[in-house]
Image (cartoon, rainbow, N blue to C red; front, side):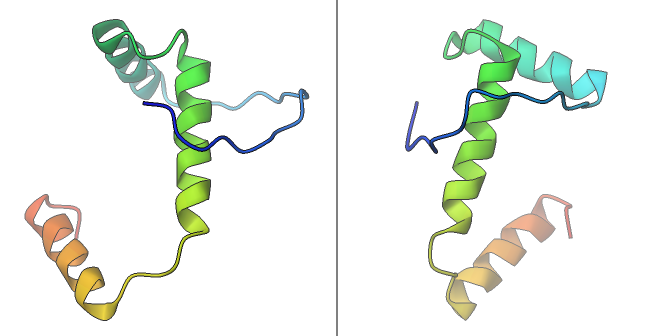
Length: 76
């Protein structure tokens, strides 16, 4: 499940997230066994989002399909 890893320094900072979100991440990790901690999972997710941001933009057609999916899910 691991992809491209962004080279980060060994220095860390604390980040606060809602407890409910933390518990969902913890449950996901326990059920899938893909990560050893919530912190490792969150770091992975953030790295993937940042890598995605470096990729080329979507075409107008792709953007419309994404918007349609988000509307169908109730996000828009």
